[in-house]
Image (cartoon, rainbow, N blue to C red; front, side, top):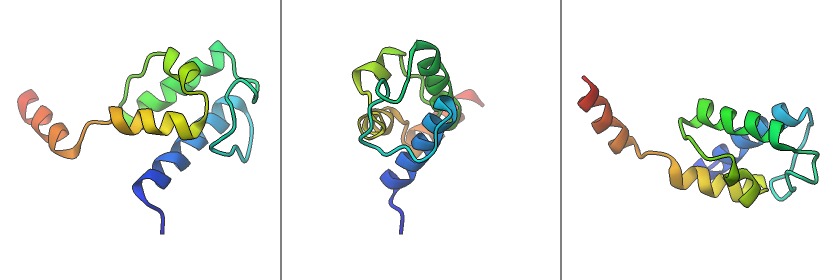
Length: 92
């Protein structure tokens, strides 16, 4: 059974694979070692914003250059369900 963290890591890995044009990226692999650059980083950050609703600075990817590290950042930055509900109520 996949935990929430495992699911987040899997989704984040797919974003990286799509942006880098690679298959089978492992969570400890380094973004730069995989051929990542600033243009690719922009695609990853945009993918994270689209997939998770989290707006990270581009620098986050270079400061946390593995899927495993970045998954922790995304997890910490994701709004909780309760907070998301209260934001939606405020919008209405």
